[in-house]
Image 1 (cartoon, rainbow, N blue to C red):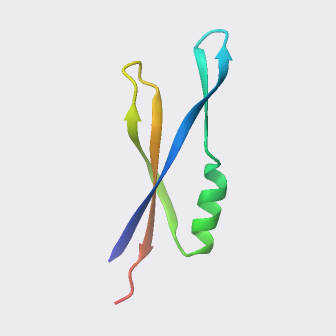
Image 2 (image 1 turned 120 degrees about the vertical axis):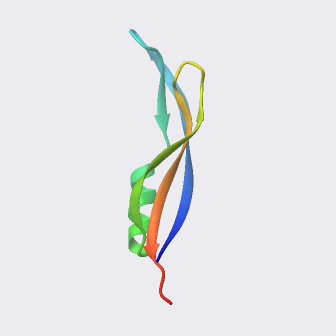
Image 3 (image 1 turned 180 degrees about the horizontal axis):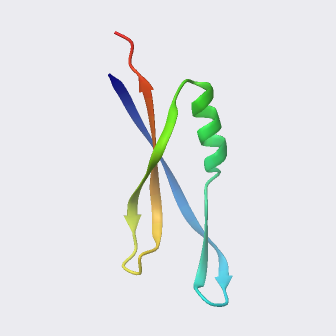
Length: 70
C-alpha cells in the first residue's frame, strides 16, 4: 500500500518576456524533491492547483509517495 503527500509550490512573477508577456518563476522545487527523497519519499508528478483563465499555472502540487509499512 502506498501513502501519498502533496507539497504546494507557487509561481511568482519574475519579469516580462518579449513574446509571451509575463514571465513566471517557481519555488525551489529541486530542493523540495531532494529533501523528500532523503526522507524516503518518491516524486511521482505534479497537479495544477490554481490556474489563470489564460492557462498560466499559479500554484502546483508536487506529489510524493512512500510505501506504507504495516
